[in-house]
Length: 446
Image (cartoon, rainbow, N blue to C red; front, side, top):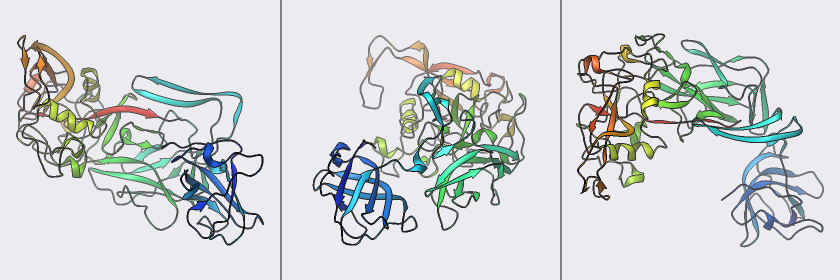
């Protein structure tokens, strides 16, 4: 359901304890929580009429029984935890917590939503938004690479953590663990202004109030600085930094790099076991016609079943299940820029290894000259003027064009490159030299 706010919503309750409260009806002159709507969430305050016990949080209104669940406590008289309310009448009303507010908008400020070039920007003009996650420059990521294995959060960044606003008035170094090549790291902030990276994406580094605010990839080799590939020195990929408001549009930002401030691309080729590793992981078996990928659960997979072939159809079912797609021709040419052109690896890479000669400016590994990858574009020759049952039992196509392959395989030699393409394969093809790489749009939320 939706998150909603409404003006002048206030009721009373006599519920005790720390659980869901039963609402007893609107206070004179106010609306009831019915204005929020059944199943919707809102900010709430509960306060006893002496004012000594209070709680601010996020709750869900249910019309049956007229209840409000206390889902998340933002602040309270009990040190930020659920309050064990005793007997007596309490006021319950919709509020707008200070930690979730936007301050500094000048009179006449407008909120604008601007789509374009694969980027969605939501911005406030004429003022400075201050709230849950604020950066002085919303058009850039919150972090700066300062060395092969070091980084800082930028000065002026403000973050709410467990009801406390943490302000980094100056650029602050991120505490790093011992970094492992080919690994994604999450960046966490604690309510005492500790900032730390960890390879654990889902669990905080230690006890206390923490918030995951971004991440990066520590690559097995450095990015291309010209047009002859990268190097073999492990380093943070500066184009892999993401934060809460500057990130890939897909649900999981790990294993991706931002290409030309335009879109995000998977650093690694798609692996067979994407259900375990995601679509972009270092040193895993490459999915291709000889080793097809597992069937995604969103398209009928059971966690172990593997496709019988790596057709264009199957490939894009996998990528779409992660909110990604095959690259268009111009996207591929961009993501592969900086690789060694007109050259190929010579042998099947088998796994998503480092061949630094074929690393792009953005840190995309095995960008060209190792595996053809399925593209999004159709063209070239077309099938006969009749229907063909060529979609794996999901309908027939009439005179369908071929689909593009990009980049060149390990045997392609001088044919390979960032603008290399072939247009003579049907979407039904499944070949050992054809793999896949996902891309998605760039998302800016300020």
